[in-house]
Length: 98
Image (cartoon, rainbow, N blue to C red; front, side, top):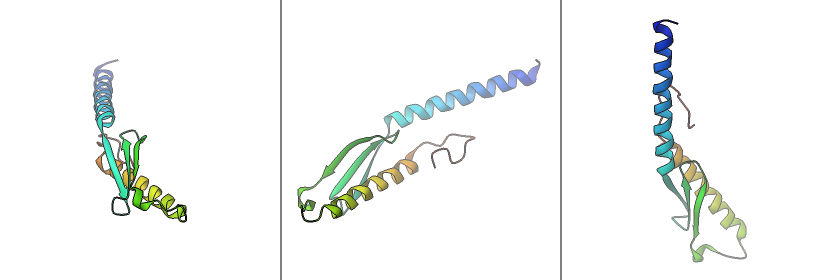
């Protein structure tokens, strides 16, 4: 157990620190996705949980609920895209948030 073991231990400690930093950044991250020129917005937390959804009354048509469903899905997908773009990278793990 010479210097090779010490080096690996140090690398593991650095990786743990980086993971901790990324977790903290993700905890504080919020993104908003929108669809229909802002008629529907979805707010996600850094871990992907939906925090809020807003629907403007003018886009609610009981005769066209499918249209509203499409807007909600599009806003959610937009928020996820933004989350991937804004998530902090984890050094040494390419595509970690892909």
